[in-house]
Image (tube, rainbow, N blue to C red; front, top):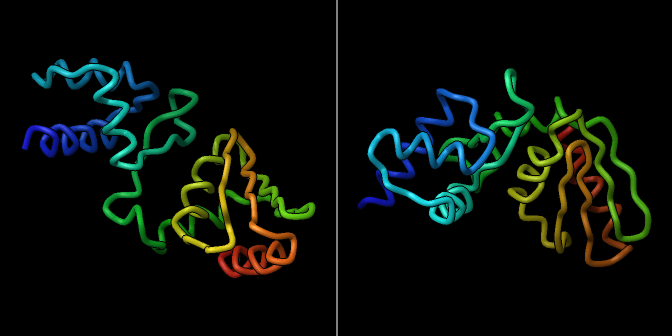
Length: 150
């Protein structure tokens, strides 16, 4: 019960404030009588599948795709379309260039697609690296991603 309440509070906090570190989130929770450690926050961030996006006041802030984290939504598709600058490949690797600060956002979207041929993704500030299981499947994955660019 405590975890559920704490995680609901985390979602409220990141919706109302720009929080860019786990330590800062920990401080905010402690202010409202949730006695937590950074390790607890780390687990919550993972369970809530929070990610970082570019902030207005701070360089980054935590964000959530609401309750639709595991499903592709119109909102996610719109974010993907607006963030992606280019998609290129070399063998079984796909490089997606994004607007600055949106590599993780695009990574969340690609991961949510649950494409069987993708064995992993690594996101940076403005780049997403997608590792495909075989070179032959690279084109298929690029075509699937292209469909979402519309």
